[in-house]
Image 1 (cartoon, rainbow, N blue to C red):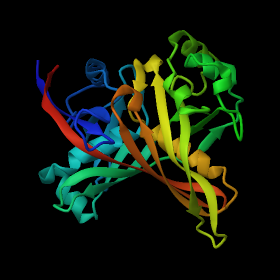
Image 2: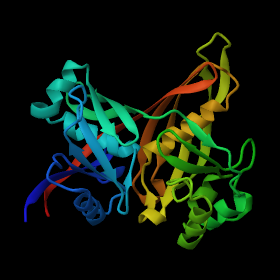
Image 3: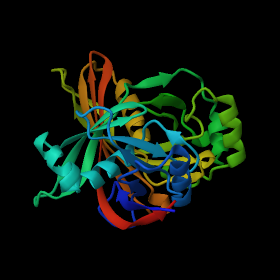
Amino acid sequence: MRSVPFVTVDVFTTSRFAGNPLAVIPDARDLDSAQMQSIATEFGYSESTFVLPPSSPDNTARVRIFTPTAEIPFAGHPNVGTAYVLGRQDEIFGKKAKELGGIIRFEENAGLVEVVLADSERSEVTGARIRAPAPLSVRHDVVPVDLVARCVSIDPAQVKTSPYGPVIASVGLDFAFAELVSLEALGACRPDVSVFREAASTYGAAASGFPLLAQWHSVARARARSKSKSGFFEFIRYIRARMFAPLDDVMEDPATGSASGALAAFLVSQVPEADVEVELTVEQGVEMGRRSIIELKVVKEGGQVTEVYITGQCVMVMQGTVTV
């Protein structure tokens, strides 16, 4: 038997015991894939990360991300939290990151993820901003409103179909999105595992799509400025969301950066302006008592979403060892 150090952090929050918890194994060189999966299952968090040496010296680390049931190619809060942990380790990563203007790069199954560390006035790492590794992709399946409603045990009339109905989108990991008519409807959602299984069998081609269903409700609109000289346009700036992943043994996730990034990118793709730059905020985890704040920035050029940035603050919680 041997002991492997770990740390846990709460991500997308500045308050301990809020946000989304993450377990990080800063040195996973002696672990195989089965052991990584077992450790992630033991922690039971929505994700755990395992840090390995990069294949290229130009990059900071290779990062593998596991849910309690499977390895996934990309996720938002694991990248933000892992960057926060490594950025605070000056003797290993911090100095190199500072030489690159606070930038570190993670090799992941979804591609190369660039992370910018966030510093406080005391030059202490407080969080990170990541750039989504993949361009926006939208599946053109017609996701039945009835199926969405049954997944979360609400009346189909609570699911909006205008200006667009439920959709599957991704900036590195597929999610199904549906807008609800009110915050009351959002609060009433209760995942039904049997219906999620039904949805997963129907939409099996989206490996992480329908099993990871996101519900959202916009609570504020504002005037956003176009990058071109066409002026301003109406845009959602604040969103309350919930995300359920019962087939990954995560009945509800307190904060889902990859889902928020995909949702923000999809919304910006729908505005008529060809060149825009939009910032918006997703609030998640409220119903769980783990309020999370996810800040997003989306750039659209020539009619295509070209960049999606996901930003969050973090706080240290625990450290120790895992015996394997």
